Image 1 (tube, rainbow, N blue to C red):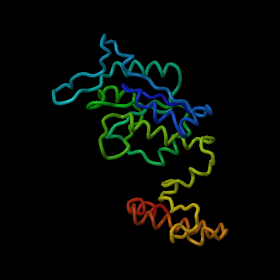
Image 2 (cartoon, rainbow, N blue to C red; image 1 turned 180 degrees about the vertical axis):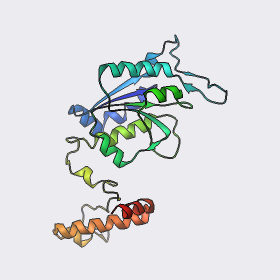
Image 3 (cartoon, one colour; image 1 turned 60 degrees about the vertical axis):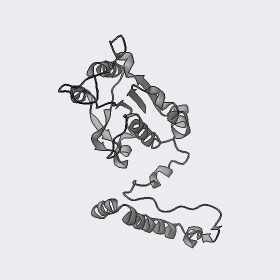
Length: 230
């Protein structure tokens, strides 16, 4: 998978992408992440990429032209499955979307800033608009990090145990069940006996029951959806 991220703050990605699972995927050449500074495609001598909105009002708007130049350059080099814009009014990102997109070969992620991006650019180039939640961030960079991390960890060969992602929360519409590690008795709190029984069938049943119960209590919205689909 190749992810091209369009941003005016490429330095923000240095820490998150230089460690852990993403770094491992890059080192294994399973994934590529390319950061592109939108300012490099501005024709303004000061590398300006924003301007005042028509009709007035507070804030600035990212201009279409620098972003369009960059997108056109990338599209001339390869075909993209999606050109994504991170925006509060986009489709809320979830595990089902991550599962689908993890099989893609190439995607572009555009990080918005200020009051947003000129609507004409969105209409012409953007194929998918994504939100990471019902709140507003100062820019799309953190959202882009979330999407990239979520996709890359699902690619075969990235995680040490490829079955690990299959038991994550939301994969089957439920939250994950509680997990335990050694010692079996921690200051009087004991690991449930079933998890030490060695009976794989009974353990799987227990985990499923716990996942259902936890989802019912903590995320009744997910539980309701799960019961409809079950």
